Amino acid sequence: MRKIYFCHQYREHTNSLGNSMACQREALQKMLDQWEMAAVHESDEAQNELHIMGDFNLDCYNGKWLHPKYSLRSLAKMVIERCNVMNMSQLVDKITRIQYNSISRELSSSCLDHVYSNAVFRLSDVRVVSTGSSDHDAIVYTRYAKVPPPPRRTIRKRSYKNFVEADFIKDVASLDFGDIYMCRDVDYAANLLTSKLLEVLNIHAPWIIFQERKHFTPWITPETLELMQERDSVKSEARSLSNLNSNDSQKYGKNTENCETKLITESNGRKITIRRKKLTNVMVALQSFGQSPKDS
Image (tube, rainbow, N blue to C red; front, side, top):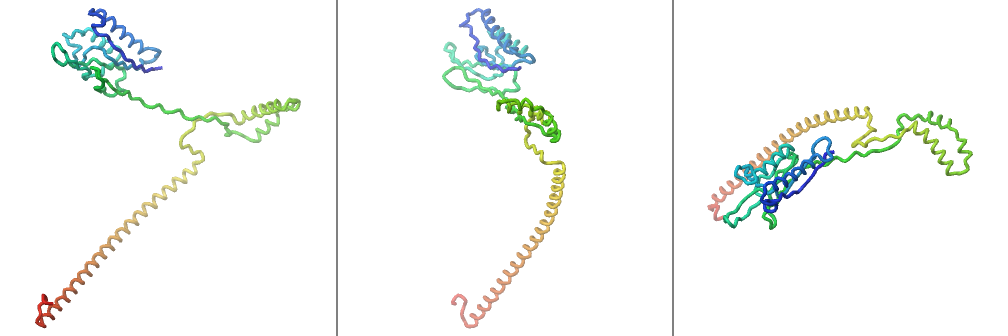
């Protein structure tokens, strides 16, 4: 069975292990051997999924750890070779540590915090989060996983699919109940009778286990399905006819509205004409009496 291992490691730097590069290689070799042991631990088919994080004190920013002048290049090559063998990748490509060098009076940026994994296709991009009082930033990523579907519900019940009542009664009638009649213990006699009847019942109606299916409708027969299809086809035809009728009615409605609008416009025009005629007659009458419209 394939397993998933999450591991946090810290590779000691030169000052704590001594200036000898041999001590550095020996300590790193033990760490890389642990990677290989975790990859094959209790796994028969494929490698286990590994997620290894931590401060490795190897500056990989912009490929610096492979530069010929880098002092720990031999250690970096050990890590890269083991990654190639185990199909692992280093995922951090951003600055994770900024330190002020009091001697050179400069800020030194490096990528010392790494993430190694052999399941890159299941991981998100690594983010660097500046938090806390440490000179190292936090590295964050997400391992995506699908939620396994829950097992289907199983039901255990008797199957009466091939049950024939006449055959069942015949087999029950052929049973020997003599030991039950001779028994004086009521409970023991009831257990004997139950066991005898169950033996016959298990033959005619055996126990079965089946999975419960969603939206299972065993009461809908093929004849019912045919009738449902016929109903749907008739319903679609009726809908298409109703759409045609509704289109005709809409056209009729639009024509009616246009006619009503035209009549209202004509009637308003007539009213305006009548008012103008009345106003003209009044003005003529006032002029005949020697008055102007302003005086009135």
